[in-house]
Amino acid sequence: MKGIGHFFNYLYHFLVDSPLLAGLALVALAITTVVALAGGPALAGWLLFVLVVGALAADLHRAVRPK
Amino acid sequence: MDWAVAVASGLASGVEFVEAFTIVLAVAVARSWRTSLQGAALAIVALVAIVAVFGVALVRFIPLDVLRTLVGVFLLLFGLKWLRKAILRQGGMLRMHDEASIFAHEVESLKKGATDWEGLVTSFNGVLLEGLEVVFIVISLATSTRLFGPAIGGAAAALAIVLIAGVALRSPLQKVPENTMKFAVGVMLTTFGTLWAGEGLGVHWWHADASALWLLAGYILVTWAAVAAVRAARSAAQPAQAHASATGGSN
Image (cartoon, rainbow over all chains, first blue to last red; front, side, top):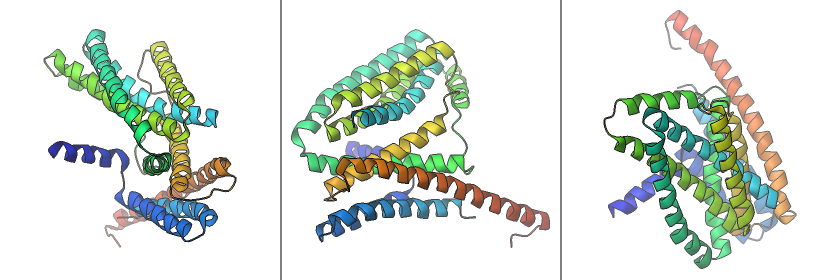
């Protein structure tokens, strides 16, 4: 159990630097899936790009905001 | 597509090879080449075993669409992580990655140690961790495209270039513009991550795989605009901070 915990901990730090950015990217993928399944697979591609860019912009805005 | 996969693999792996080589070089200077190369060789044996066991299983038992989704999500998260750091570094919000200071720090900490185990384990850990990242990149690219040759070839070419450059320079690889490389890698991984995750989740890309080109162009433009925005935000914050400290207030 401890080994699995270590593995997931390593994996998390390997993939995630900013939980906000990773979370928003996953939300973007979820929205894209719903749109693609709802009958808009061509629109879903453009939407995914826009949502990923939006996620990056939101995260950078938070990173540069004066504390 | 073959060249795109080879270039993506080569650039992404190259960054990891530079980091691994810096550690191996630091151990070699502080201890001995023998200790350093022993640690590196052990790590390579471990990596080969990992690839032999998990690499084959990954390709044989997981359906391509599921694999595309998983790899796409991984690459998207990994690529965005690199892109974010590169943008913040270029915009002046984070310190640039300084290979020379990492090298000096490694040498200093190793000289304080007493046994060769420290050198061996340091070299082993550095090569294993960076090597695992290379294996991840190569397997991700190779299994998603079924283009094993270009993915492995790109990584092998990057390894050869880093080794030749390292031996020729005989100094820490501070002249490799790492942040520029990380920009390119971040943009390419984000592009492939978006493309493959979308494909796996049911997206019908405009002109199929050729969408990688407009995605790449789009992410380059976004990155360029993001660096400009971060620099502008930093410049705007500095006079405000200077004014606050001059007046002794924080309003």
